[in-house]
Amino acid sequence: MDYETPQFFRVMQYAARADRDVVDMVSGNPDWEPPEPLREGLRDYADGDVSEFQYPPSVGLAELRTEIAERRGVDRSRVLVTNGAGEANHLATTGALERGEGSELVMTDPVYPYYAGRANLLDAEATYVPADETGQLDPADVRAATSDETAAIVVNSPNNPTGAVYPPETVEALVGIAEDYDAVLVSDEVYDHYDFTGEFESALATGSDHVVATNSFSKTLAITGLRVGYAVFPPEDGPLGDLVDRARTRHMIQNVTGSRPAQAAVLRALRETPPEYYERNRQRLRERIDRFTEALDRAGAEYTTPGGSFYVMARFDGFPGTMDNVERLIDEAGVAGMPGEAFGESRAEWVRFALVTPRVDEAAERLADYLG
Image (cartoon, rainbow, N blue to C red):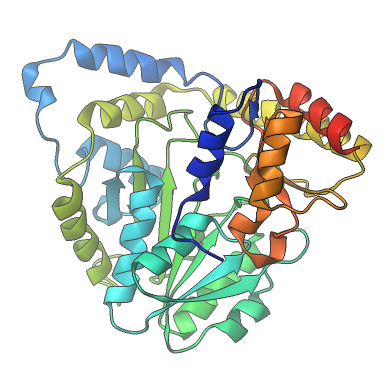
């Protein structure tokens, strides 16, 4: 599979040029409102003293790092605020490779394409472990794919694109494999607030020195444009303690620092947003999943029922998930999804749909009419 060219933009650009109305089910941009405290934080920041418009600390605002650290149960020194989860994952992966203990990245199939693209960018060897039909990983398969050449095992739970949520015993097993091979488990937990199973547990809960957990507020607070993410690295006095210092240096060289107003607004939101905000959005997604999969039933499709995140993968008889067929869906059905082949060989027959649009019902009916 060619991971050199991001396919997301190709699909979105094709949809934008269409001569008809198209429901966007490609992008992962939440369509609901961010919490009001976040907007208040931005408004108050705009009226602040000019000193607050200057560089923040490169590692992130101290108050925000403290808030994150307390929520994650770690020391603040382990937290680095990044330009979204994308940078956090990049810093974790490059740090693992730069240790010199191996040049291989073990990833899942299906895979979030940017992980695979990063492996290409860094000239790392990529090994893919197929997930089962529900998106779950068998740790025995991961262990069989891991070797002394493995620098990092990269996982994502709740998962994009399958919606799988790895149970605690799977996470513990994956951590154990990373420890046995002196590798880094890079655990992308960006959809942690969208767990519908109640089983999600951060890899940080294992207490392992071989875990880097990455996250972002983009999905949680519906602010993909503000670009505030973070990584929690192993403690500095542990066996992988150089990872955090290496990441700080690379982050400073690449970015200098992150957005001060965005960090200040996120801090305000974390402190003042009630739990009901998160539960309301989870319920919104549960209802959309139910309605969308009911329509897929009418279309005679096979599909995944996500335990988390907000993606559904579907397979239509005689209609594989190629880029050509995705373009046909745009032109002839007015629905834009992602080709399954963009996520790897194991889901090449499937199409992935993002349920972050108020037009889910309309899209579902269009698909049922066209493919049913």
